[in-house]
Image (cartoon, rainbow, N blue to C red):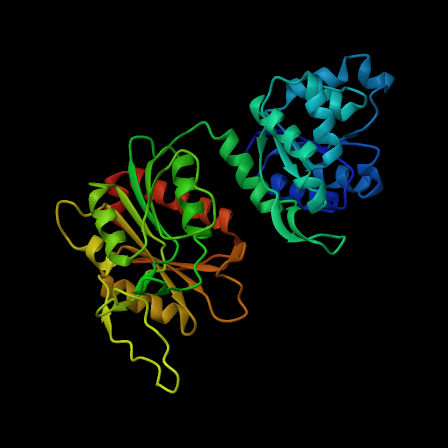
Length: 408
């Protein structure tokens, strides 16, 4: 998607600047052309020589370089780019962008451009949550500046919270989304399920699982970026709704199935939700009280509807492509292959959710894509990259000529 695209990367002064080197490497791997503008503060953390070696281009830093400015270098830099990326976008450079300052090469380029700008904030949690920074971010968003992150995480100062710069893979995904001109899924309809379900025990208790919804929501966003009309059926999650997606919020597995059926005919269904296998045979109408000396109540369970198997049944309403997920703690590939056969779906995305993997609630995922043609083992990627890769595979499957499909 990025082949031949020209990225102007502005690197400001923060500890997260070390990630900018990996970002340059990934962009070059995707065959994008990268030019770097390094601020004086940024040069305290990364060297021009390292960036030049990675980008295979000159690194720019001096606003008053006679060689460059004889040809109005700062104007030409911004005009030559398809996209300007500020990573890390410190509190300082965001404030200067919001104020319209042009007191160094970086801010001058940003003020002189008419191209899209993507900022990846990185700063201490208190700086990020400060009213001044939030006001600057809102000002920049109102002017059309795009943002990716920041993420929650441990800072270099050992504080925890929002302010950690997005990982390079996430920034690449955001760049791809902004520069995407082709919409291979335009005119197609997609259904995605995401998050956990909650099965009520009584009015205050429920059965559920640790799914965060991050992977399912990322898939919905990626399909929308490729032009699909997406309906996202989501269990209770704390992640924000993806932009450009119709979101239906549910609690139980029965509600999720009803919402999926109400979505109507779709071209692809991706069942990424972690649906509870069981529900209460009878839900108590009042809170079950704990009685001193009494044994815990016995919970009688009943099976929940099988959403993936239901959507995979042959018929006029069956999607052209049904993709399931297999969250396993052992025998990952074998169990996923067996699940694909039992459910009748076309593809299964298998991921390991055993203790220590950090898949549930984490930012990265290691998956295997299982199809009729075999097993593809994908490297460990951010969930956004997994989503983009899966969406790309779906687009290829749905848009290729029927003769190619029949030949497989």
